Length: 417
Image 1 (cartoon, one colour):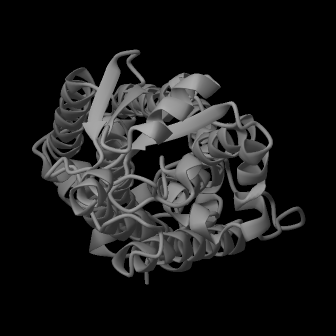
Image 2: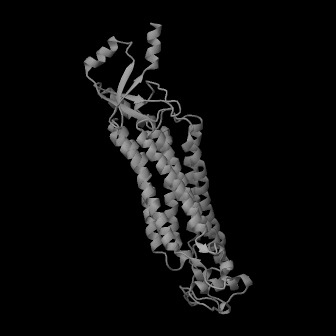
Image 3: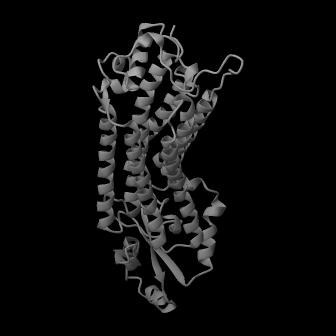
């Protein structure tokens, strides 16, 4: 049976784990037979009582899994059945591996809380439990960053659908950002796997203890800080895209406010990533007990990030009275008319008069971006009524340019006439 940390080793594996501790403390010729002293020290028997945060870790991880699975599965069902009005696209395929990584991370935390002493003080953890914790948590770190990176890839693909029809520059920016995220994932993998020389010393405390000297590893704190900063900055970039689109799109202010709310929920992921970075910088002692603060922000980051990626699709689940609020407002302002550019990204075909035109940004089938025609006077409207054969409509796009498109429905009726 493995001994508790701070006590002399009782098994062969304990011996090598203790030696790894001593090597990391800078001792060149350590004697593991006496154990290792790591703060905090075990309290005297009359003051000792068991403190554990394992229950909170398990509960928080379970709730996070339920939230992410609910929102993502609902999103996939709506897209597959086209209830959301949009086709099943690349962003939907990408959210599937994102969900797998995002669910795997809290599942690993539940395992650590049950079998590896996560949430307990070091003096209540055995050497074997610490060995398991170090192995699984090192893998979990890669899983976490893969989860946030694949979620960002899905959001990037959605932003392509949102702005792809407005300007080629948007598409170039999106593909450049997509390539950056792929490089980010590769960096995460290689910097974690090859953080130490030999690489196995990063994950295996027993193998590291058997080395003749301390393994050469670059700073884990530095690596975590750099990756977290990139994580925060990419959140800002992703959040700015829909904000810019909505700011330059002329739609009813109630619809705009609701869509801002939907997209800005993802801002909670941005806040959580910052707080996680702050909590990580204060994690110095009693790591298995104090790391729950870092974990809580990581779970919030994942929950809001994955859920926010699906919220634009799930806007169809809002009450119909809320969705129709802007329609009533548009009927009261007949001087303004709204148009929209529609069509699948693959073919670029157009389709006029789609229902709920003001919600075309996130809801309509094959309609990825809404355009406003601006104000038109009564004389222009009457001219269009007098000339049904005129089937070219002019609209103002996000980039301020004028877009013209032919109305195939009007052309068809003109031919019949």
